[in-house]
Length: 74
Image (tube, rainbow, N blue to C red; front, side, top):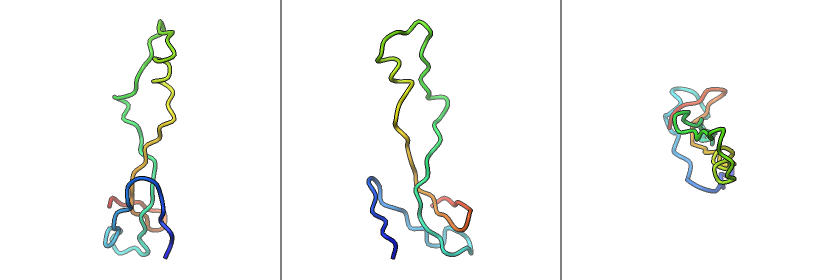
C-alpha cells in the first residue's frame, strides 16, 4: 500500500466516489482563493504590514478523489 504520510488532515475514503472508475485514490489539490476575500492595498499604502497582506506564501490545499485524469469530490 502506498505511504500517505502528510502534514495536516487525513485523506478521505474514496471508496465508491469515482463512479465505476478504478483505482480511486485520495490526492491533495490546491484550492483556488475566493476573489471576494483578496486584500487590495491602496496606492497610498506604504506600510510593510499592509503590503505583506497582498503577498502571502499561504497556499491552501484540499482533498479530492482521483481516477485516471478525472477528479471527484470525496
